[in-house]
Amino acid sequence: MMKFNEITMEHMLKNAPAIIGFARNRTIQWVNYQLLDMFGYKEEDITGKSTRILYDSDEEFERVGSVLYREKKGRGSVFTRWKHIDGDFIDIQLDLNCVNHNDYTEGVIFTAIDIRELKKVEKELRYSKERFSQIFYFSPQIVALSTISEGRYLEVNDAFLKITGYKREEVIGRTVMELNLWAEPEERNKIIALMRQHGAVTNHEIKFRRKNGEVISTLCSMVRIEIDGQDCLLALVVDISERKLMEEKLLKLNEELEQRVTERTRELSIINKELESFCYSVSHDLRAPLRSINGFSLALLEDYSDKVDEEGQDYLQRICRASQKMSDLIDDLLNLSRVTRSVIKLEQVNLSLVADRILKEHFEREKRKNVDFIVCPDIIINGDERLMTIALENLLGNAWKFTSKNDYTRIEFGTMKDKGKTVYFISDNGAGFDMNYGDKLFGPFQRLHSVSDFPGTGIGLATVQRIIHRHGGHIWAEGHTGKGAVFLFYI
Amino acid sequence: MSKKIILLVEDNPDDELLTLRALKKNNIMNDIVVCRNGVEAIDYLFGENDDAPVLPQLILLDLKLPKIDGLEVLRKIRSTEKTRFLPVVVLTSSKEEMDIVESYKLGANSYIQKPVDFSQFIEAVKQLELYWLVMNVSPVNLK
Image (cartoon, rainbow over all chains, first blue to last red; front, top):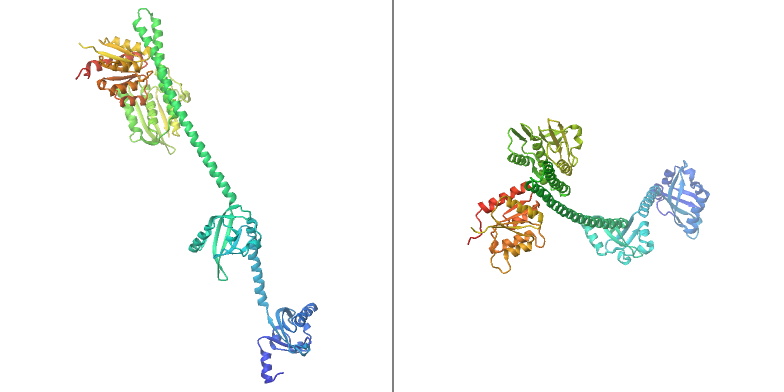
C-alpha cells in the first residue's frame, strides 16, 4: 500500500491537523494523534477496539453504520458524535471512504471534523431565523417585501393575507400590477421616487384594493433594503379605513353644524332687526298720545282756568307730570333694550375724555357755584365706546343730580387697584343712600329717593349694570345717607 | 306787506291742533296752511296747473306721514328748482339717529324733536318762528 518512505508517510498522517483513522470491520486499526488529542485516548486504549466505544448508544452506532455502509455505499458523510474519554460528547462530521468498493472488509479510511462551532452557529442562525420569522409573519400590521423594479412579492406576512383576503400562494411571486393591489398605481412610482430621494417614506396615505375589490385606506411606511444584491421595498401598512370613515363623518358633522350656526345667526340677526324696528315703532307711537295728553291738559289749564277750580287744576298738573314721566320711561327703556341687543365693538376708549365732556355739558346747562370736578387723566379701557359713554352719562348724571342740593359739589372719576385688578370709581358728595337698601340700587324701576326729592325713572342704574356685565365686569356701590356715594366697577 | 305763509305738514289731528295753538299763542301774523299727508303737501307746493301758488316762508314737516312720507316730500322739495331754497324744519317725535341723518342728508335746515311736555313745545315753536320768519333772510321772493 504505502510505496513511499514509510516513516515520512506515517509521520505525515500521524501528525496531520485533522482526525484520520483506519478501520476494518468497524474495528479501529490505526488512528492519528489528532484523534487521540481531541478525544483524550491513549493509543493502546483505542487501537484494536470496536468503534462502538466512541458512540453514545447502540442505536447511534447502528445508524451510522447503516448510513455509511448501506446508504452511502462505503463512501460518504454523516453527522454524529463521539465520546471523549471523560464522558463528554463532541459533535463531528464523519467522512468515510472504503479502500475496496467491492469488499468493505479490506478496510475504510475515515476522517472526523469537529463541528461544534458549526453547530453552534447553526443553532444561533436557526434561532435568529425563527425569531425574525415570527416577528415578520406574526406582526399585527401588514408587512410586505417586494422587488422595487417589478413590484414582485417576495414575502408577505399573515396580517397581509388576512386583510387583503389572499392566500400566500396567490401572492408570492406575483407583481402588484398583476394583483391590482394599488388602487392608484401611479402612487407607487411616486412613492418609490420619494424613497430614492429620502431613503425612506413614512406614513403616506395609500389606498389598496382587497381581493374582493373593496378599497381600503391605509397609512404606509416604506424603506429600501437590499437582499442578495436586489433592490427591495419593505412596506409596513396600517389599515386606517375605520379612522377615515370617522374623519369623514366628523367633517360632515362639522359642515352641518356650521350650516346650522350660519342659519341660526341669520335668524337671530333678523329677529334682532325686527325687535329693533318694533321698539322704535312702539316708542314713537307711544309718544304721540302722550303729547296729546300733556298738550291738552295744559291747554285746559290755560284756556279754561276760570272754569276749573284749584283742585281741578292740580289734577290737570298731575296729568301733565305723569305723561312727562312716561315719556322719560320710554326713552330709558328703549336705551336699556338697545344696550342688551347691541353688538359690542371693542376698542381703546379714553374714559377721561368722555367724563370731561359729560361733566362740562352739565355745568354748561346749570352753572352752579363751588364745583370741583376731579377727573383722573388718561383712563383708557378696552370696551364699546357707545355703551361705556351711556354708562358714564348715567353715573355722572346721577352724581350731578344728587349733588343739586349741595352748597359745594365735588365729583370725582378715578381708578385704584384692588387685588391686582383696576377698579374705576365715580364718587360724589351728594345725598348718598342707605346701604341697607344697597342691593336694590341696580334693579330696574327701583328708587331709593322719592321723585319729589330727585327726579328719575329708576332705570339708569339697571342700564349701567347691564353695560358693565356685557363687558364681563362687575359694579357695586357704597354710600351713606347725606354723605355721598361711590360707584365702583371693573371690566 | 306780502303774505307770509307757514306750511304745516302733519297727519296727527291732536298734534295739528296743539301746533296751531302754539303758533297762535305767539301771535304770529301768518296764515297757516295745513296738509295732512305727503300727497296733499306736494299738490299744494307744486300745484296741478303749475301756476305758482304763493310759496310758504317756512315749512314745518312731520316725518311719519301716510301715503308719501316726510322724507319723500323733503326730497321733492329739494329737487325742484322753485322750492329748493325753502326753509324746511323737520318737526317730529322721532329721535332716531337714522331719521336725523337722512333728514339732513336730504337737505333739511333743522331738525326738532317734538317734546312731550307741551310748554317746552310752545317754547320751541316760538323760537322757530322768531328765527325763521323774523331774523332769517328768506330765500323766497328773491329773483
